[in-house]
Image (tube, rainbow, N blue to C red; front, side, top):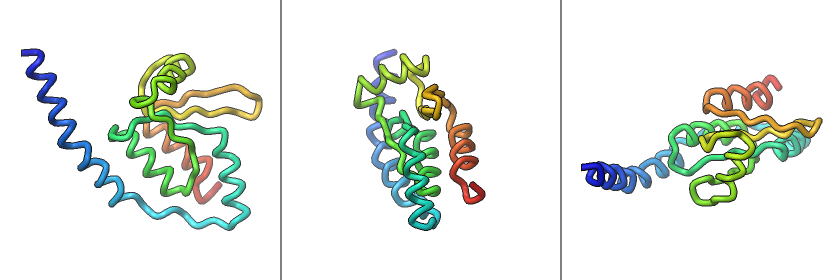
Length: 131
């Protein structure tokens, strides 16, 4: 019975994966407009950020949409396809859970921010139109 359930969910994942990817592409919002200097400043600040994620996670999709809406160039690290990224997430953040935003502060300390709503709130506070 257990193997039957496992194959059911694998089949379901195979069917839903392309739907989720296409849905993300069709519903990704336009990026905010910034001046060239402001965008360069934002890109420089994004160099200290990395998003640990995998492609078909709905919560990761939610964060990637916010990244696109804010016009950010954050490095995406796929923990499902790259075992080195998964290991780095486990060692640094303590959990192999996605999405997780790695934040390298100016004082060289590192923060690991889990939960899509918390990540989106942080990005909006730091890079939103009021920033």
